[in-house]
Image (cartoon, rainbow, N blue to C red; front, side, top):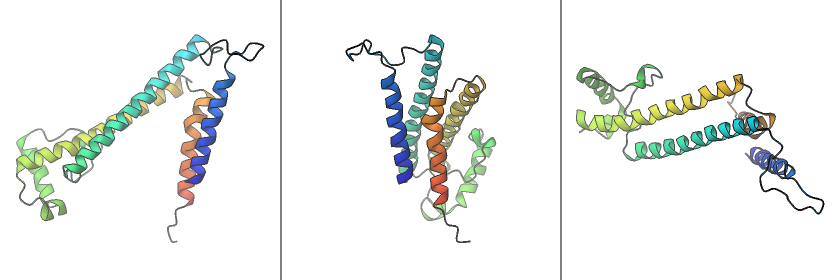
Length: 185
């Protein structure tokens, strides 16, 4: 964890130096302009802005996901969906028979047996909604990340500095985490 922290700190420092070096200075060392990256062409600035908005959207969606996770946890909804079907589980039950089938599966779960044995189908529907919505939002985050990411890669919108900013720390973090695992083999 320390290695990842120091790696990220170094990258942030390096990125800030790159930004500072982009300022135009006059002969006395005074800044002539207050905006970095003056030497970038308009197309590159536009592409950088698009990537920045995409990343900010991702941050916003993750904040919402965290809040939804809190609501899911507080309502005890987290185990109401007994199966994780990535594609077919996208839609909730759409008719009474489907609801009864899902409720029957839930009635076999430890959560129902030990905590919610007094639940009716109506109670189940309310906790099911929060878990379903939490999973639906996670799928949406995946789509909002993956589709533009593939598009940006195909159009070569990412610059090397973008890769340094988030690609290397991800790889370093994975390597750091995996190197610390002991499976007892």
